[in-house]
Length: 239
Image (cartoon, rainbow, N blue to C red):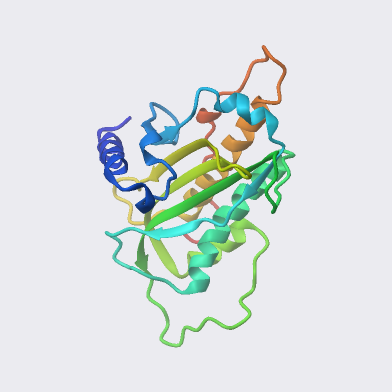
């Protein structure tokens, strides 16, 4: 873990232990602990959490909250722009889970995991044409990549992070939780849309991996899900 990342982890861990529970995204932020490897800076993984996953067969992926950081130069955004950012993550998660054969449902149940999460961002506003206008009946895209490409025409994301909780959808029991802070590379000004898309897909793939592991027979070799990282794929899109 780099010194820069270690400083961030220590600062965030200190913050989560002093913030009142009702002021934090997390149900219980005191459960989070620093992680040694992988994309997660902080995580909560109960010892019996993986065993408990065996009883689940479907996932609810909630629409993420959008949290704009206090040090963001740009403090707001059009409703459609922020909804697009939420749609980017939600679609990417759903695509990875469904590709692995896991049903994504919209109602709680005894065998359903609820993924609740937030995307926290630091923004710069791109210059808009003075006649820029968002029409009524904004077109809803059908893929995560289509959504994120369109969003990048409107805002620059300087850096971002994810805060996630996996809960029993009926009881609210915390199954796992985690924090990712995706900083930018030295000398760079903004996060590329490919990096954002890859991070969302990585989280979705790791969740699918954990669920798959717990359907394997006892004694079977299991994948180290924390080490799964989907690399950004450069394309002709913006960013």
